[in-house]
Image (cartoon, rainbow, N blue to C red; front, side, top):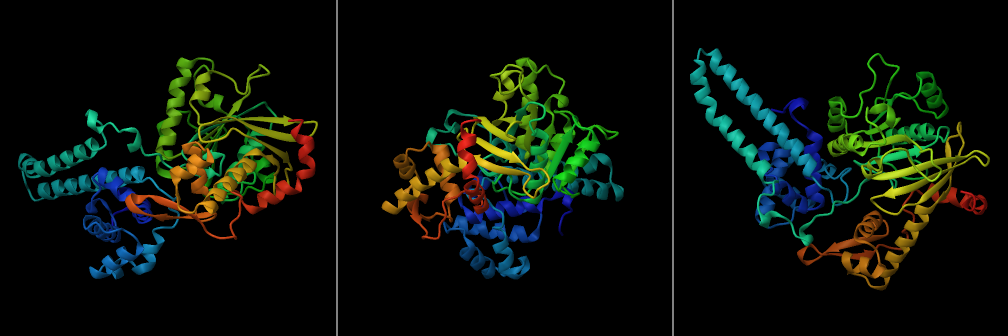
Length: 488
C-alpha cells in the first residue's frame, strides 16, 4: 500500500536512487546512514533499492544495464513501470551528488510511518477490549526496537572516538550547485548591499522572475525553484507596479509576503520560515534585512545569533538573498558589524552611476570562487530589463577552460589532481571548473580504484560556461566596454 504524502517523500527517494545510479559512492553514503529497503515508502522504490543492494553485495557495479538486468531477473521490471521509469531516475540529478539530506528525509518519513503503525496497533488492541497494561506490554518490544534502530542510525553519523575523526584524504568535498551560475550557490546566504535608488529591489524582483521561470539572470543560467519574496520595506502598490513593468505574472511558484498583509511576514528565527525552507526549499528574498530582525546591526554579539538562524534556513534547503544598506562611510560596502559579512557566503555591492545610467555589481566576498564585477545597464520595460555590459567572471572562466582543455588535448588521460596541478588551480575552484565542463568540453573514464581520467569530446565544444546569448550580448556591447571600464 502506498503511503500518503504526509509520511512519504517520493522525490527524495527518487533523488537517492538516481544519485546511486550516477555515482556508486552514493550507495556507500546511504549505507553509512543505515538506509534500508523498508525505509522507502513506494513499492517500486523498495524493489529498485533491493536490487541495488544485491548488486553491491555481490561486488557488481550499479548502473543502468546491471540494474535493469537484475530487476528483470527478479520479475520486478514490469511492476516498477519498465525501463522508462528506471531511466527517468537520472532526470535532474546533479553530477557527483550528495544524498545525506535525502537519506535523512526518507528515514524520518519511515520512522513516522512506523510510529503510525504502532499507534494503529494500540487502537486495534484497545478496541478489542484489551487492558492498557497488557497492550503496553504487547507493543513494548516494537517501541524498543524503533528506539534502538533510531539511536544506531544517529550514532552512525556521530564521531565518538579518535579513529572516527577523518584524515585529510578522507574528507569529502561536495560539488557546488548553483541556482544562478557562478553567482548564487544553492543553499547559501547572499548579501546585496547598496544605497537607496541603486536598483536593489528591481534586481531582486528580476531575480525572482528568472528563478521561478528557470530563465537567464544577467546572462547566466539558472535552476528553476519556487521563490518566496519577503517584504517589510515597500508598499504593495510599488511591488505591483514594478512587477508589471518587469513582466512578472502570477504563479504558484512565486509568493509575495509583505507588511501589507494582516499577518506580516515572519522575522528571522521564526519557525514558520524553517518549515517552509525544509519543505519547499525555495529561494527566499528578504527586503530589506534590517526590517527582519530586532538586533543592533553594529553589535557582533547581537548579530551572531541572527546569522546563525539564517544558516539554519540554508541547511534546511533554502537559498537566502538579503537586501541590505550601504554604510555611511565612503569606503564601506555594507552597514553594520563584521559578523554580517562573516555570516554570509557571498557579498555584492550594488552601485548606480546615475550620470551614465550604469549599475556595477561588485563581489567583495566569495567563498566559492573569484571576486569579480559585473556592469549592467537598466532597460526597464524591455524583454531584458538589465543588459550585461561587462562580466569579469565570464572572461575568467573562459581562460580557465581554455587552459584545462589545452592540457587535456596535449595529454589525454590525466587525472583530476594532475590536471589541477598542471593548470595551477586551487582544488575547489579547479573541481568546479572541471564539473562545469563535463560532457560539454571533456568526458571522463573511470579506471582502477575509481580514478577518473579526462579526455576531449570533439570540436563541437564551446568555451562558454553561460548561455550562448550571454556571449553575444557582451560582444555587441564591446564598443561601450572601454568607456565603462575606466569609469566604474
